[in-house]
Length: 177
Image 1 (spheres, one colour):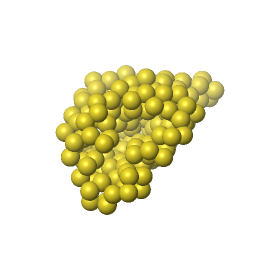
Image 2 (cartoon, helix red, strand yellow):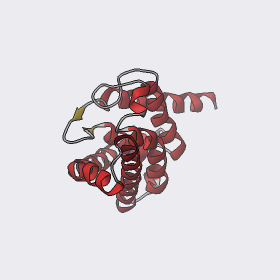
Image 3 (cartoon, rainbow, N blue to C red):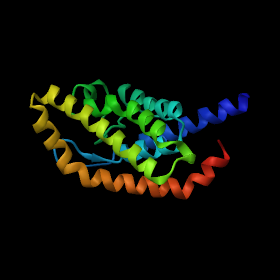
Image 4 (cartoon, one colour):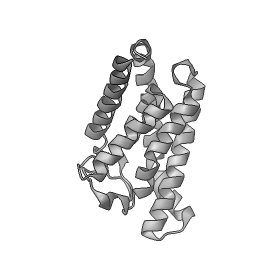
C-alpha cells in the first residue's frame, strides 16, 4: 500500500515539475500571453484521475505563489494573483479536475475527451475574463473578446496536440495505474 501512495506522490510531483518547467514559455500575442501552461494542464487532466489532476496543478500554483518564476513570462509571487491573469491561475486546478472528471480517463472515448477539453477551456476563459475585467476594469463582453480571439486558435492546437500525446502514451500510463 505504501508503494502505491509513493507512486502516486511521485507522479504528481513529476507532473507538477514538468508544468513548472514548461508553463513559463509564452508568446505575447495580446493582453494575455499564449502559454504552454494550458497544454500541460490539458495533458495532466487527461492522464490523471480528477483528484490527482487537481493536486498536481495546485502544487504548480503553490510553487508559483511562493515566488518561483513558473507562471507565464517567468513570473512568480503574489503579484500574479492580482494581475490580468489572476482568473486563469485561480481556475487552473478546478479546470483540471473538471477536464479529468468529464474526460473519463483511459476508458473515455476521443469525443468525450475533446468535449472535456472544450468544457474546461470554456470554464478557464470565463474565470479568466472575470479576473481580467476585475483587474483591468473592462466590461465582460470586451474582456472575453480581448482574451478569446487572440488565443482561440492556439488553444485548439494545444487541445489537438494534448489528445495526440495522450493517445501515444496512454498505454504507458494505463499499466502503471
